Length: 102
Image (cartoon, rainbow, N blue to C red):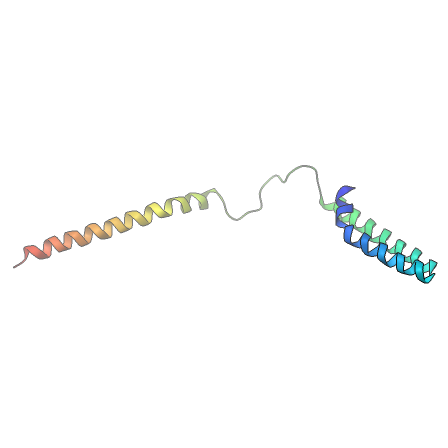
């Protein structure tokens, strides 16, 4: 299983270092124990991946950001421009009305 071997790459490298150290020290039982520990860890990893990974994509997206949110964000700059234009036209109208007064 390719994904399991990718997940276990660092553990495998650490195992090789540990086994080499034990071999130099002449501890054959420690070498065998380290290999057994790695095999157990690898089996757990494969079991977890088999339980949680599937070949088909999820049926629905797990996102709180939907299409309506996108539409609201896209229309937001237009609403701000319209509000600014209304403010400017209101200011111009009030200036014109104030100049008419004596």
